[in-house]
Length: 443
Image (cartoon, rainbow, N blue to C red; front, side, top):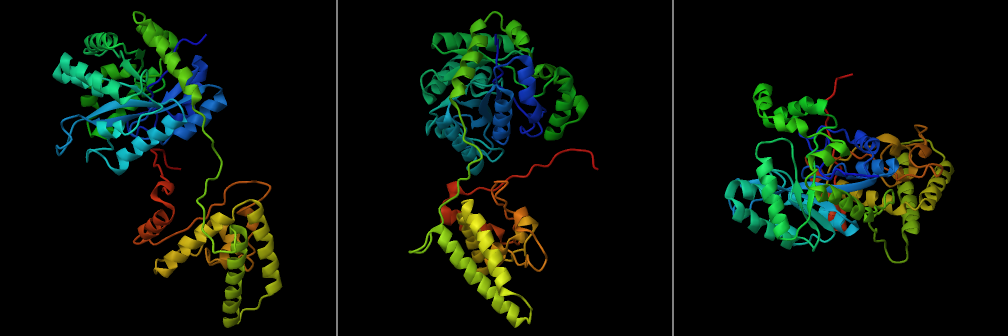
């Protein structure tokens, strides 16, 4: 029978802070007998989908959350306002969408220049479907108690209660052996009971095993530019920030059993979150009257091929038009049969825009250069027949996956292409893909 679920977990995506490899987290949780495991990285949801898939594959409930920075109330006008933590967990799809909105807001409109951050007013804009946990000693609630006293702590607790739907705020209790925690936990528990709020136990997990604590300390030193010896002197409580076994957590909070039980309550509530993955969601490409996307793609592709023929003739190049036309028809049938004509038209449109604006575009790279349709549309400038390139490496009905053109734009003007796409399809429907650098031995 399940005893406990971890709700406060930082993976490698808590950059230079978490030391838990996300690929190991779900497996470690399953081995411990946990019914669920949370992902609550700092200020981002980078690992959410990987975590969701891994948990589903392991047969446990994925809990998706984020520990966000919140500007301390009354200091938002300061040049460098203090930032406190608040843990947000998506209970259902509505909550997941609201959580993405909040986290995105923290990056696009940070409340502090120091880091991604939000204000209490950001949270007031909508927390439906989100469970709020009051976080660690650096949390919005704990900092009020520690910095300003009991009355300030009670006021903040009442403030937080108003931000979330009834029953969705939990007062978080942690015990890493730090000097301040026994007194703080007593104050938090008293405040929660006086206000009729549930408490929940957590461990501020930053590494899988206790033996990994030193590795996490090195990450912390890199992040804060501190010497190892200086950091180690103040790091003792942090060695308890590992993925503890359920029995350890039950023992640690043996005098507050409801705090442990509530981890299972939250885990059960989060079973309502189901994500639809792997389904392409492309914007609608507006075509001229009298066409649908399929017929319009055929039209512009054939027009483009005729233009290529004229260029061949002008250059004195020998070619068989029928071979090109037959290849074009085969590719178009596959593209339309796989329901991707809109994708080709979208790419054709923004590359055409770039060239019209004299923004340099690369001639083509990767498997997309094997498409004659792409060549006809001037998405690429490499003749796939001349170079014996295979279209099936790019798009194959036997292996259904989204086509993916690798396109190079001049670094000085690429932002104009992105702005064009965002203006045409809506900024909320356009995003860039992040690339992560890792610390690893060179090959």
